[in-house]
Every structure is written in C-alpha cells, then in structure tokens.
Image 1 (tube, rainbow, N blue to C red):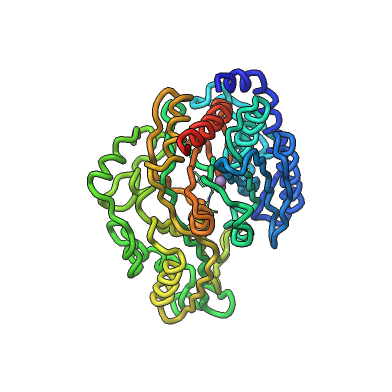
Image 2 (spheres, rainbow, N blue to C red):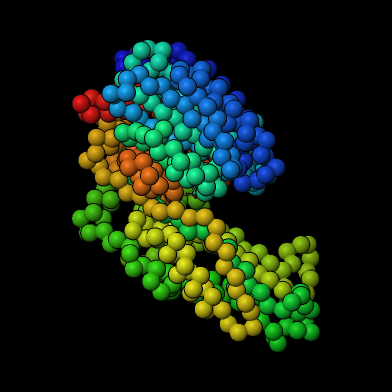
Length: 462
Ligand code: BES
Ligand code: MN
Ligand code: MN
C-alpha cells in the first residue's frame, strides 16, 4: 500500500476533473424535471466502474430510477465487500443563495479547506464520497493489490426514500451476498480527527392538512366566527413539544433506549466546541430537549421538526383572507428500537385527536426508515479504524450521527451483514444547503484510506 499515496499524487488532477464532470449532471431525484439527468448519471457511473476495472457492470432497471451494479470477483473463497452509495442529489434551491451555480463545479478555498473544496450540489452528498470508492478500486486494480471480491450498488433514489432499492434488495439477495457493506455517505469530526459513524437515526416523514371552511373567506366578514386553519395548525404544532422540549405524543418515547451515564460520558469525550458551533450558525444560543447536551440532542434523542409550512396569502402586499386549508411537512428523527411505522401511527392518532371542532385533519405518511447502531468490536469496524489510524495518524472516534440512511437497517435485515460507515465529509460542508462542497483534502484522503480498509478487513477475516 506504500504506493497509494504516490498514485493519488500522480493522478489527483484527473480524479478531481472526473468528479467535476459527474457533478455537472443535475441528478435531482425529487423533481421529475431532472429525470433525464438522473438516468444519464446512472450511465456515467456505469462507465466509471467499467473503466476502474469491474469485470461486470449493469444498469438494473427498477420501478423508479436504476441501480448501477458492478463487481470484480477474484476468488469466490475470499471475502466480498459490498460498496453502497447514491448518485442522486438534493434539489439545489434556493439557487439564489449559491455563490456559484450548483451544477457548474468550481474549486474555492475556505477557512476549513485551505487547500480548496469543490463547490457543487452532490459534491459531498454523495457523488464525491461515492466516487472515492471508484478511484480506490482503480488503484487496487492497477497496482494488483485488490485483496478480495468487490461489489458496487449505487442507487438514484436515496434522497427520496430508496423505494426502488428496497425492491431491488429483496429480489437480489444472492447477487448481493457479501461479508461487509461499506458506505461513505456520512461525516467525520474534522480533518485532524477522523471518526466512524456507529449510529444513524430513523425517520418518519408525514404531511398534514388542516381544512376549515370550504373556500377562502373574507377575514373581516368571517374572522372570529370560524376556525382559521392556519391559526389552528400553528397551535397544534406548538402543542407537540412541552416546556422542556419533550415531544408530547403519547407513547412516543416508549422504546427509546436511555444511554447509561458511562456511555454518555464516553460520548462527551469527542471534541466539540459549543462556541464555535454557535458561531458557525450565527446563533446566540442553542435550543433543545432539557437534560441533554447538543451532541446528545442531535444523535441519541428523537426529534420532531416542521420542515415546511404553508397556506393562505404569501404574495406581495396584504390580502385579508382566512384560508380554507393549511399544510405542514413534519419529520421525526428516531433512535434505534423506535419503529418508524408505529411512530407514524402514534403521530396520526395523536394529531387527529387534538384537532378542535371546526376543522378536519388529514395526515399523509411519506417515507420512513429504522435507525441503526453498529458495534465497535466487529472486524469491519476494526479494519476501518486501522485504515484511518494509518492515513490520519490518530485513531478514529466512534460517533452516532443524527442523519438517516434508512436503507442500512434493511441491508442488515435482508442481507444479514453489518455496515461500516466510513465518512469523509464535514458537517460544515453544507450538504442539502446552498454552497455544498467537499474538501480536496477529504476526497483524496478518502481514496487513500479505502484500500487500507480492504487490506485490513481481509487480514482480520483470516
Ligand atoms: N448522506 C445523508 C445522510 C447523512 C449525512 C447521515 C451526514 C449522516 C451524516 C443522506 O443522503 C440523507 O440526506 N438522508 C436523508 C434521509 C432520506 C430518507 C431522505 C436525511 O437524513 O434527511
Ligand atoms: Mn447521502
Ligand atoms: Mn442527502
């Protein structure tokens, strides 16, 4: 593996340019206007896997966007690593807040990335992180150091709930057979302190609709005499948290695992600076559930957040009107053992029950998924830690993340294997936000670290 550093140095400009080409295709899965681009990106990923040295690559059609599958099987008796990633990206809006167009990648220096970062939608989540694996494969094939079998499964619907991937995994258990699943779609603490994600939160996502009168009304003629759906919705939403910021839905916390004081003390050892955290977000204070600190609130505790709310008149000037309907999109982040379908039911029952007379309420479930925790004594975790230790010079710290990759719990259920979350992004990389970027340092370091994971995984598997 001596040569991986040299290989990356020699080919880094090409590695960066190839990623830039991939980032130019706007593969926004949420918006059907980009449908053609999503398919085109799948083709580009297929071509990149062929070029990197897979023996077999195919586009697998699904009821939705295709899954790119590739493999290089060198010996059926050796272990198999299954790499998962996604080639779809979040919508770029609000586009006007980008300092350069989201699908015209440029390299800019930042305080955190003095050597430059690629700015584009998907740079970090997840095209950049996924492509590190393609380039790591290229290196291992070119240098004849691939120590085991490898399979790639790159999907195009992660940002919209991975529906087609569930369909695909259930139907292809034999094809996807593996000894460990490797994913780079999470983050790490900092460029000086790597971390391995040991937990992901689950998710229940719902949309609510509150209906009052059968048409929009004059707010003078009717105001005060009929329920205003926007007033009512605001009140109902406000009641979902109590004064301690606990969620008030009956049964919501029933299966929530309480961490021991020792476990919480262990978590508190991870480097974190509250002042810098506030400064980075221009906040005068943090906010959240009483009895927990910031790093607990965003990882081991469940949450309920309104993601969008609308209704009535929001155009220029004033219009005196009581809207007929009000809407909100609400996400609940869940911790392991909370079942997302059960939580969706509890929410629906409770939200419907608190509606006052004078309105009707409709709850439409969107998607969801279970949380995930992974032990730190598995061969996969140890191999990842050895790889990070070698390239960063310090061991990785296990960290539970607040984000969700719902398909990971399904992988464990259907494919019976553990997932190792080797992320190289930073929280400050602005994924899902305007000006998403991925550090050149992070990209190249990822390409350097991944082959070491293979090496140590195979060594430890013997
Ligand atoms: N890569 C993210 C999830 C992530 C990011 C986990 C950083 C941990 C650290 C993924 O693409 C994502 O955005 N997931 C969605 C869920 C999905 C069902 C839309 C999320 O977490 O909101
Ligand atoms: Mn992602
Ligand atoms: Mn994402």
